[in-house]
Image (cartoon, rainbow, N blue to C red; front, top):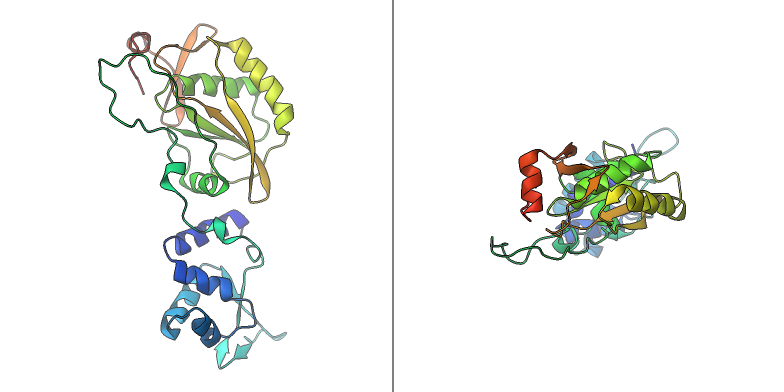
Length: 266
């Protein structure tokens, strides 16, 4: 069982359930279920049900004697947290502002009469948000990149994001399946070649952010590309790319015309 999987299970079980999270926090391998129920001001039946759910998800484990028999106190099995998540902060499991999940949402619909607008800066997601994104998978806005991904490939993805309505975010150090392995280079070592590649390969000029975020003890490099400004059409070696879903395509002639007219394609 990987730490990331356990955290995902915990988030599923505890989000929106502060009383259940309180029960989990009180489990320490020494307190009996009746003690936990009293301290949490929770009915014993509900506490038992909560602990059974945690046990089924392997968030808590029964304490055992050397012969494998469970240790009892007050005629109830003693439980302790799974060692993988024993010392994690509750922030990993609690809800977070919905605004942190949305990269860019116009405050009002964009009318046809409204012409080229300034790009909005894309915020760097927090650790809990990144965990949620990794669990949900890639989409129009989010892209995972494993260690060792070539800088030119990153640059191509950046150019495609730059031509789309919401821009996007790449997570360097996350595999395609959302598993977090961390970066193999520091932010400083990736920043210079990436920024040089963006400057030398993409026209017109484009500014992207690169920031390091600690996720489950791993360092993930987050590359944030601003939403399209409805003015500049970005290209690499004369080719205009756009992102559709989780893929990058060269723009078709009709799509190129739309972009040059300040119309969103994606």
